[in-house]
Amino acid sequence: MNTLLMTLMLTIMTYEMPKLPYANNALEPVISQQTIDFHYGKHLQTYVNNLNSLVPGTEYEGKDLITIVSTAPDGAIFNNAGQVLNHTLYFLQFSPNPEQKEPTGKLAEAIQRDFGIFENFKKEFNAAAVGLFGSGWVWLSVDKNGKLHITQEMNGSNPVRSGLTPLLGFDVWEHSYYLDYQNRRADHVNELWKIIDWKIVGDRLK
Figure 1: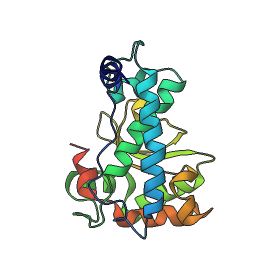
Figure 2: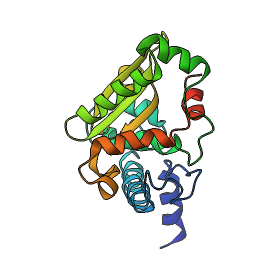
Figure 3: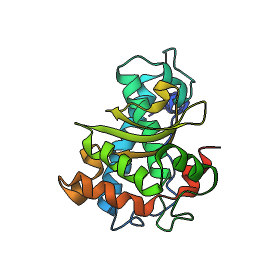
């Protein structure tokens, strides 16, 4: 491949894979290395590659992910941008040794205000995750007034579409859990709480 073509290709590759702050096997047994290798290494990489090939020459060229997901009509650009944004937030909220295993400070106060005790919040969140029909995501988000919301988002959508700021997201597409849990989505959802670093989630509220 000639140098000019390589340069042009690098110029349009503006969206990048998030760098994992842990090894591919570090989240075991909650999420196996095999799942990380496929989910992060193949599924997310495909969304990033697709987005980089779709955006050049469109009105979304040079735009950040949140702008694209907030404004793009349903279609290939929206779907792939949504999944890049979703997965970036998803993979970066985990830690094999969470600095904070439960919410603290402002986030803890908001959860107590809007959902009651932490266990009530988890119960509502789990119900939304298990009850979502088909493929999609469940998010804890905050609106402009500081109120928290649990939302179900189909396919690659994200709460930014509704003017919300996403804080915590669970992926309930089958590719996120089937290698480890087969059809037991509820087991997958229950286990994810063990690897959430609530410091990271809380920092997203600020």
